[in-house]
Length: 230
Picture 1 (spheres, rainbow, N blue to C red):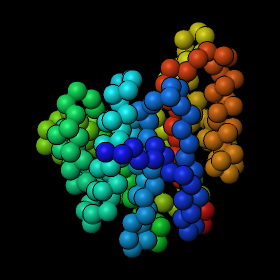
Picture 2 (cartoon, rainbow, N blue to C red):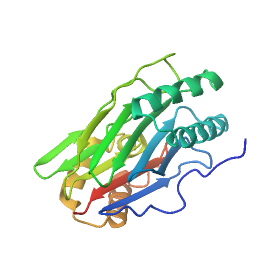
Picture 3 (cartoon, rainbow, N blue to C red):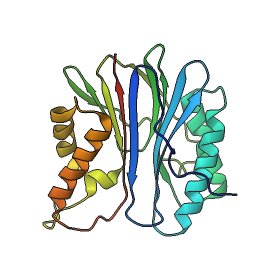
Picture 4 (cartoon, rainbow, N blue to C red):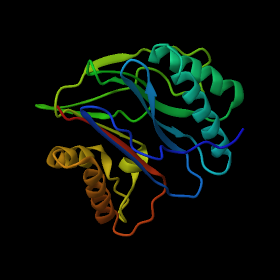
């Protein structure tokens, strides 16, 4: 099987929304992945995932995962069914590795956001008066045979912002072995949410750089940011 793209070549244009994603790789071969996939009837699928483990073996798992998620996203099935089918596909080919996955479908006409969180870091949803976490609604992919998943649906209001990330952002440590942590991410987002998304990503990377004070990263850092403009 040929290796597909690790991430989208371009950040997608979505009416009334801004979206941005980036991977800061720790090694030449990493387990982080994100993608945007156009669907029919005014929907865009968004996925962020992380393959467990290190080394060359995860490249094959990541490639198989990408091929499966791209194929399944073309089917007219609900997100919970999609992730259940993805789980079976991964377990059929890879028995010793698991993948945390957050998969969502944005209806940019109705402004609904339906998602499944399969053991991934909960994305942060910033709303007008606070925030919430989009928590797990099923096990990680690749561990539980015939695992069942439950999707959840929310409405996105103007200026709502969703921050997806992998644990390389929150787990990165300074020389004193203190992790950057979710609280710092959340505080940063609350104070800078009006910035453009590419600028917001750059500002966060600068903040992480200042925090680690030269300590080397131990994992990839991947983020996707989605914002409803109006």
